[in-house]
Amino acid sequence: MIEVKNLIKSFPDKDVLKNISAKFETAKANLIIGRSGAGKTVLLKCMIGLMQPTSGSILYDGRDLTKMSKHELLQLRSELGMLFQGSALFDSMSVLENVLFPMDMFSNASKAERIDKAEGLLERVGLIDAKKKFPSEISGGMMKRAAIARALALDPKYLFCDEPNSGLDPKTSLTIDELIYGLTKELGITTVINTHDMNSVRNIGDHIIFIRKGIKEWEGTNKEISEGPETLQHFINATLNL
Ligand SMILES: Nc1ncnc2c1ncn2[C@@H]1O[C@H](COP(=O)(O)OP(=O)(O)OP(=O)(O)O)[C@@H](O)[C@H]1O
Image 1: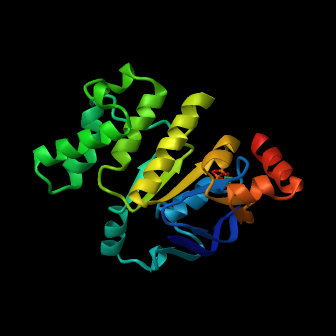
Image 2: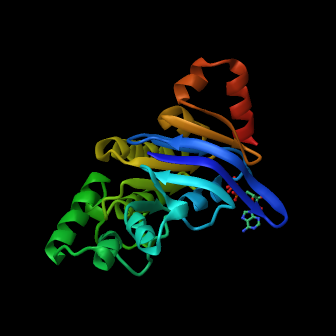
Image 3: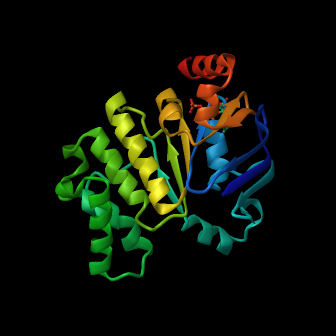
């Protein structure tokens, strides 16, 4: 579980995160939602250590990122998987080489073991037949699958996904959501997803953190939204559709 406590992030001209406290639960899809400019990306960047918060703490299963030494931060980084917007695959590498890349950089496993692991992941994301293809030869949804396999190559405990559905049609978005959700359960990882997508909220929103103008407006489950007061549904819908 990741717990954010009293997180404040201010820039010289603006207070962006205004005392946010929230929990991101293990083996769940934790969705950060809110309209553009609400502070979702700044929150995500603080959580992965790319941005220093002004104050507050970020606890990874009890370990406070804001108080870590360089060595502890390096250890934590090895436990984080990242799925970037736009997939961010290396164009000059095949799908298989892209998935091998983090292992070639950071794993002590033998070449045969690394290939075995990469192929297993590609099998799991339904991309084994495309392992020799290059990113320019596959669809956006396939690129996203390859990026998911790559994000999982080093067995992360925590998976961060920034707008995983951006640029995808609704049907492909649903497949990608279901893939991330299935892997979250199978591998027992704490998954954090930054999204605008109301369909994702409905389909995979185990735990939702709704940010508005830098304040945590609401926290709960998709069930609580669908079974809750209509005003809440309207409010969230209206915010995400704007
Ligand atoms: N480095 C920075 N310096 C100053 N202001 C910043 C910086 N980074 C972000 N901001 C401001 O913080 C606010 C929140 O930005 P953020 O990118 O977190 O929004 P968001 O909710 O992720 O929006 P979107 O969904 O469009 O990505 C914005 O007003 C933005 O201009």
